Image (tube, rainbow, N blue to C red; front, side):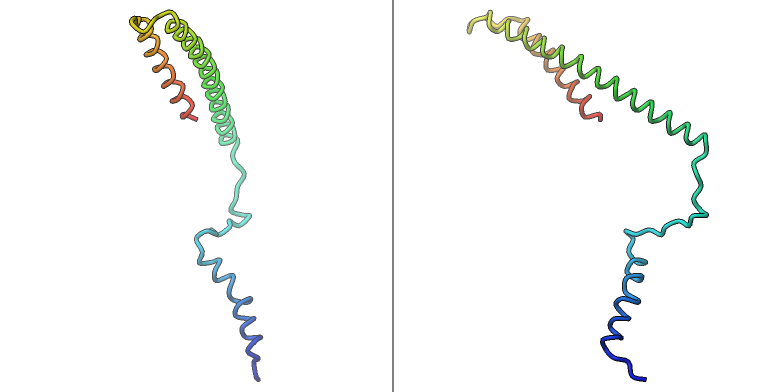
Length: 117
């Protein structure tokens, strides 16, 4: 029996190539058999729902705090501008420096809350 070279190459590449490559590739982990997978227990489902609800509530509280802080930041910045407008080049009020420091602290707090997401 004589095997044609093109058929031999076809069988090697199509017949043996991809399964060997897929079996050796760590990107494709073996799929579990249907008999091995089990539906989550009611306790696991309840725990998962509780965790999602807690995360959602924490995110809502963080968002509300961000809104409050940014409103306060705007108010402080407006007050700082008013103080600066009232002073001249020879007078720098202690209130202006204090207000600027308060703005700096609040801005840092807002930045950290935004990063926490």
